[in-house]
Length: 242
Image 1 (cartoon, rainbow, N blue to C red):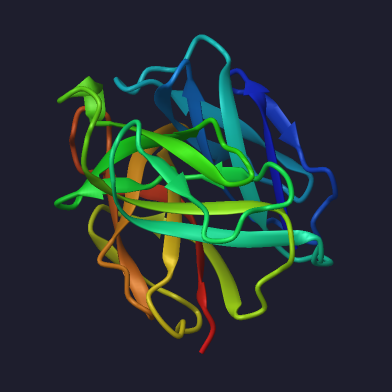
Image 2 (image 1 turned 135 degrees about the horizontal axis):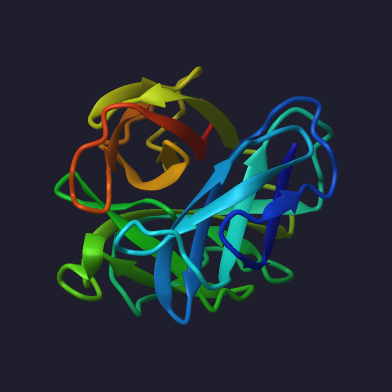
């Protein structure tokens, strides 16, 4: 079962799923406030909801409410009215990405995964519509200002006809920077992967690197640019089935 949501939340706020899962799901999230991306991560995930952690570009707890978009994947009855589409490529801030197939309503678009040369960055989607979305990408501590080039992985879920050729996988575990994660089952081709990570309850910058049909390497850093060796990671991958 896949669920999604978008709303304005403060750091530490509790989010309740519309429908309880039959077990603990995987949750990925991204956040922004006034066109400034934040690092967000689901904490204390249960079958009924999660707490949302939000930090700014310096890694400090965000003191003002931010717009949060989240996607959860877990056991339960699938919703046949939901479509999934992905976007992966070299993107930049203020860039508009157009969906290959428009949704029949506004989707949730999660992009908490961006990197350049294996260095994770902070990313968020802005002004999502049924046909497109805009991106904002910043480095840690706002280094370099708005980034004009980074590799981004984006998953969008909204009302529409499901694509039966796509496979969705998810997972969670404890990993360090530059560790490899294998998919439970290989995709038919390279998938899109969105990653969230936290350590000590603090959201960290995280991104997939070198995606293949069988897995990916996860890059995890704190907001001072240091590699994180022991983080709780959640990931969702969408790609063609074999």
